[in-house]
Length: 257
Image (cartoon, rainbow, N blue to C red; front, side, top):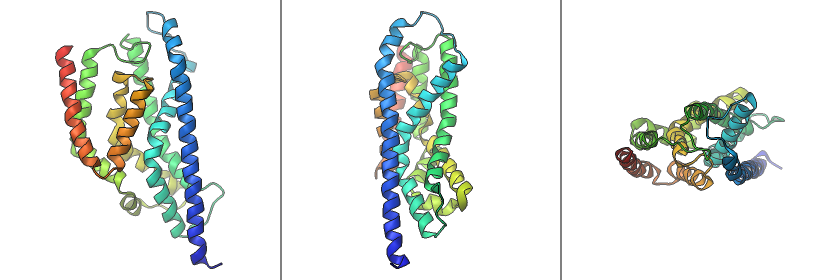
């Protein structure tokens, strides 16, 4: 069989493997979150009316919760970039490795979001110590909630937000401009893409402290919103219109506080 006939079959096989892997990892993440969500009411009823005592194990489990949540929320929207990276790698005729670089690209992407998960864990710890967080992981400070919605809305309208969106929406342009060969190159490109994705969505994720970190309906809604603004044709306008709505709601919350 000629190389010309082999390449499309290799691309198709790798594409199927990547889609199955993304689907499986995302499904496992949501199953974990559903189990946590099922246990949250019982944990809330047992909570003492005082800031909880955080141990290293508590911190590690909270970080794991955030990390898994970010995988479930953000990995699906990175799939087009991962598939494009895989196709370009094959077409550049790099030698196949035992550990496919496409997975290294995805690992770099998720590593960036793990950094965000660490910051979110620290913020949750801080709010807990200040008694500003309910047992269901929503802020009890109306002013903070309004400020977060206002900041998130204003950020949706900034040039930085739009620039990050453009990078996320243009896989070929992003990869051609930042291509690096080898395993370390795959990891570095994944980190770079994760940074732009984080630039798009970090304040949206911060809104979880207002609507409920473990309110899985809101978690799913924010994940779908991030997917839509990054991948749908009118994503830039979705970002702008939602920004006006978020800012308006934030102002309303601040007036009511």
